Length: 197
Image (cartoon, rainbow, N blue to C red):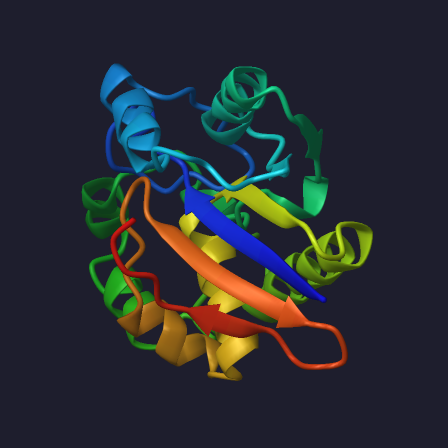
């Protein structure tokens, strides 16, 4: 019995490049919608969709579920990591306030969180709990998670048992990118590298 879980990152949101965690609920731009629609395979295999509650994910999840005539659900623990005082700010705005803050953050994102930000370990644990819940609730199905770059990184880090520092500094998740995984009953989850349809 194998359960397949795919994670798609939302497309480009309104508002340009800025730090948006769960405190910023921007919808998708037209380009963002196009990025996500283009990522859907010609014959989608999904039997259920689980979405982050944020608009940049939920709006698309509702459209896709309707198009495919499948069910969808919303899981709060799939929302993006909270960025504290950086919420809604651009990198330039942050640099203007503290020229070293971003550099320290990228070098060691675990120990250099913005003030008021959600701790990376707490975020990783809540996302992994959501992933495990989805596997348990949808055994032997093919499920699509519609979420965020941080969520995709956290799931990848847990599957590969990598440090959060490594995943955050090395793994780039583009808009509309899909991370594939599978879980055989009684075995740990695996990442899947898929070829063309």
